[in-house]
Image (cartoon, rainbow, N blue to C red; front, side, top):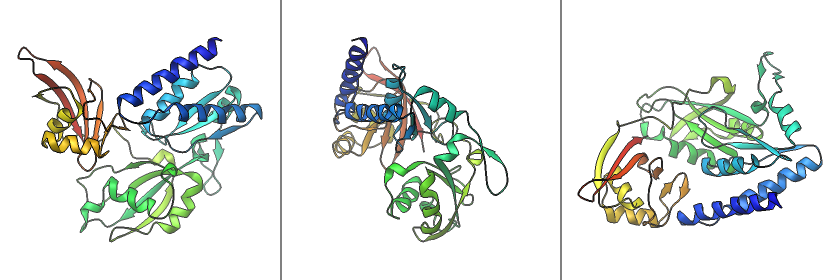
Length: 298
């Protein structure tokens, strides 16, 4: 009875979160993962999920922490990974796999359990004369253009957008790595070469991305997502509201289609094609104006 009550509370919270952002309930996703974990547990085995966005895998991870019969471990390739796969199963089985190290066939080096399900691809090319192609949007578009599903692709890491040279890295599922090594040959007009590298060589990622501005404090008429987005990305309120309705704006990595959704300190607003804004604080001054402190990321 306690277990059922706990599940009901979690389900209500998931439904409320998604309804606040104008999307469908995420309850079905969590319950589907729960069913997969229970099936794996009954056979004393484990299973993995596709790559999930940050908000989804956090909710699933929180759900499993409330249970003792099944367990999950997250794998994203690096400590700051936003998109991650989940390893699900009985607690002792999952724990045994996450503590395991294996030997590579070519150089004898040890690598961790994540290498069994994840791979890091180094994508090298001369972007000197086509700098715009060295971006998350174009790299992801080229990867998906090979015909694979979004769920097989994790984070795409571009160390320094100000540099023309240097490899771009993509975290993908291990079983898709050989296919991409042979099929991903161009990003736009730029010829590229893909090769798998150990996860230990993933470029360091500091926080949520590359800061392009220091913390900025400005005022707006309200804490609605369209108002804060307009303020952060310097577009008109009307344009921001239209972008929200078209699904071009995400709140905490989930689609937000209601311009009236209220923003709080700690929320992350992603505007397609313009970047990401991390809301540091939201307050009201003596003139009844909303004071928003935020930082922009590339």
